[in-house]
Image (cartoon, rainbow, N blue to C red; front, side):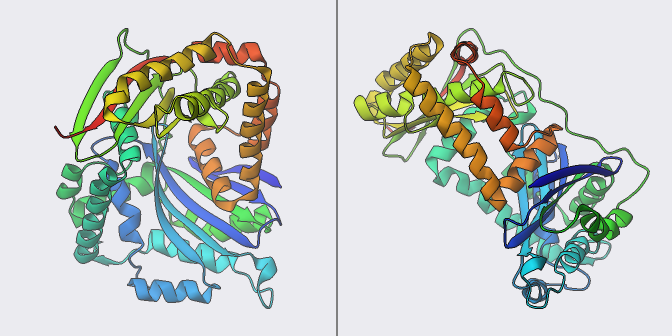
Length: 424
């Protein structure tokens, strides 16, 4: 597997992963922009409306027919948050050229269709189609409302919003219902023109084709992008200290099981050389099925239905997530903090350390075997301006010492405690 990252124009990059491991190839185009409350919903809506039609294929039916001709390929709108960058665009999956019936190329027509979506959208009166805009606004609003339906995820969204309320990271990738309501076809069109001209553009390819051929396939897209304006790359998020006393937030909904979510400051993110040690500290604490939270808080003491921790790779944040009985929340919180203290004091066995190391390394290396995980990994690295692949990160984790893990754990500080409880 060979990875080549090339700057094609100022602010326009291509990450090409050349491999014959997969029968499908992946093409992606993303606009990377700083995450902001006043533009998040506009940006999130753009790819959804673009996907509705082009000048040559003005509706979903005709677009689907064009994809069917490319051996049933897919082309999906995507909205993701990587640190404090909002990443919006398209990810396409197509049969790799090596497996077509007559070895006919799929890469070029697939890139052409993606270019058509981006540069020749279906419009009316000089802006986006009002019908498509209103329908996709309703869909986006439904997605935002539906976040509360998955209570475990909702608790994590809420603790991040409370913890990072004064930081871009606290903004949801989909924005807000109030912001969606204000969008018009004209304001959406203006927002898209701004994205085309000023956002960092990340192109991605994974498949068997040579890099030069991939660049040639994307050439019409590059030619159609606005020239002359400066493209703004998302900045590295600033680190924030936790308050001396953790914030405490409670919310009541119609739930039968409480959700306890805790936000911790890590003083470390993917840019720091200490990050591999933090990955191991997280794995020992709550990131695996052999972790302290799982084995003690959940299994041994039965204080939680689930208990785990996870890192926000491109932000100095760790989230602890647990499901608890309403009357056991105090005990559960105390034990979750007790297990954190054990990690910080080095109270873990050599076996625990090695189990955690094997788990982290295995997760990183298996990312090389999955197209979707590879694409997501490299999008995050591109947004951060980092170049190490998952295999390099795995090697760094292999070299981490016990002392480095303890030092990383000692930097963990509780910032915000959020509890979702039932109505009285």
